[in-house]
Length: 252
Figure 1 (cartoon, rainbow, N blue to C red):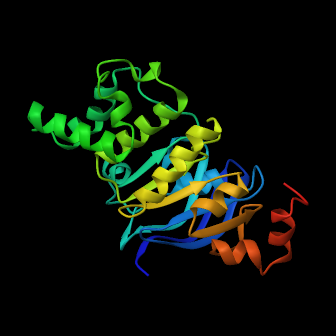
Figure 2: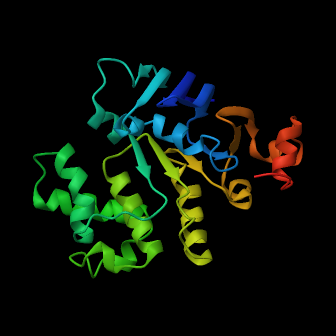
């Protein structure tokens, strides 16, 4: 097992409200891990700890450590731009920038690689869109606004934008909840393919999705991890009563 990301004793408060209560978890390299649990249990908050997005929320207090391999991303030596290059994020609603498909993908590349020629940039943009399985659908319209495409295409354009800067980890906050079943299936197939190169952490309310795509699953409740482990084992033979009750729809 290769360790990609490790969280140790994470506590987080929004004002006086403690949202995360002592989270310890390890994410394996080249695996998809799903975070499941009822609304308000802390899934998305935990996800945002992994690239320090919670830093942007006023009144937030964080305690604990998050290690990308051996480096604590909360240390005083951290560079937030570099952290977010290594730990990319895809949101619930597709959020392409209000610019062309090409410029969406090139945006991060220009920041990271400031001396690329136009030809080198073209190659990297194409490779990213191919990797996100959307190149064939946009290649003739690269100068068209990314906002003019379907929701599923927009989400894959956002994934391509994330992939362009070569992250180690991809965080996804309910990436298919706003999409139709066909677009959802395409994204799920894409994620299974992408885990060959990336570590992927997905927040989902869809139990069927978690069972289809993830290698490991973490069940959260009230800001704590109730149970975690191999997805198949957790779904078929949960060790905790609360896990069984949640998976059987008795709450949440």
